[in-house]
Length: 135
Image (cartoon, rainbow, N blue to C red; front, side, top):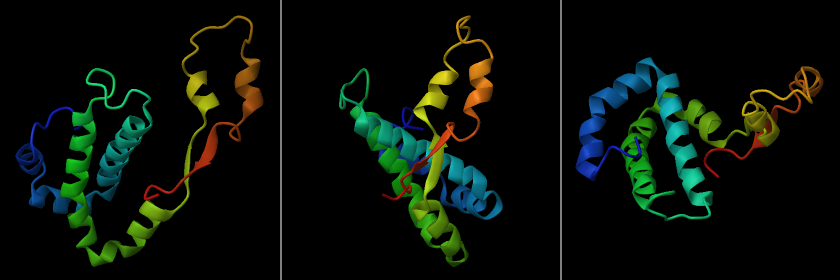
């Protein structure tokens, strides 16, 4: 979603108002996934040390993320029945995988550690509190 559109018109043709409303009303979880993916990418780009580098962290990706959000958000806020969902989705404290848990999946085989480390950590080290999405 951040690579494909070349212009605002592309975003508007990719996400029609009817499709956004249908997704919002029938499958809010899909809309949540899209919002999380776009905002996560935007945060990654914002925090990237090379931003705006055309190869590593293109400015165009950030622009497209903002274009998608600009297209989606009015349809979310027009639905009065989503007021409670908006409060929870945008302003509640989130849980995310800790850096340790993210790196644990990158190690494919390590004889020195064996299987003991996977059972010692438990769920407490896997997740940490994160800022609300709207902050």
